[in-house]
Length: 140
Image (cartoon, rainbow, N blue to C red):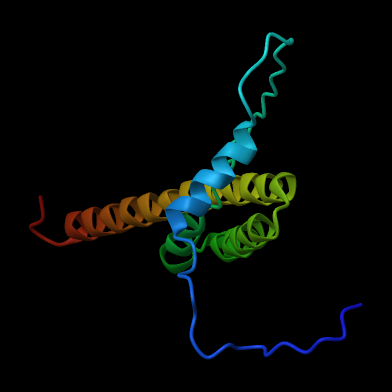
């Protein structure tokens, strides 16, 4: 252990710090190594898979919650969509796919039942109007 005291900061710097380019070149040389020899060349391949896009159907679920909430299916689909998004943020791709698939199925059922209710209501109103017009004296 050296017991001689040296100041932490010297008053004036006698040489400039090395530039980034010099450090970068030194790093490249150390990574690439020296000149290549006739030895057997070894290669390593790393397959990096991109993030799997897991649809959570949250916009569709919100739409069904607001407009086609037959039997509260739209609300339940919205809850499953939020769960799917939470699982995706945590990194659980399998869980996100499961919840997303359930949300999709519930959204389809909510949409189909909502459209059937609307079509049934329109047909009922048309039938009621036509029968009431035909019962009027002097009607068609």
